[in-house]
Image (tube, rainbow, N blue to C red; front, side, top):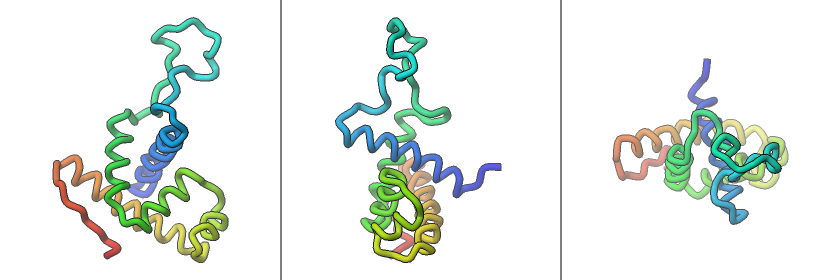
Length: 130
């Protein structure tokens, strides 16, 4: 069974990969999968976003991440774009390693709240950390 935490993490993993490609100057997901690089061009060989996600989902996640506080956005960037062990992430953030999963659980809940607001067309910024 998928939990709220798992779902938010799944969305943020896809967002992190998308954001890395954006920062590298790429336009989203690669046009052709490396496995089919030498195959003839055609619709059947184009790579696709991860199952269950499309460009709209990733863009909505990006908008929700932008609604987070600067501290929470930095946590998302460190975890989902740069990655590493909890100890490495905590060192980059200057916090104790136990704080990383605690803060992530709170950020996941806040992110899902922002996504609900976006889906409902609510244009307000909520903050659980304020």
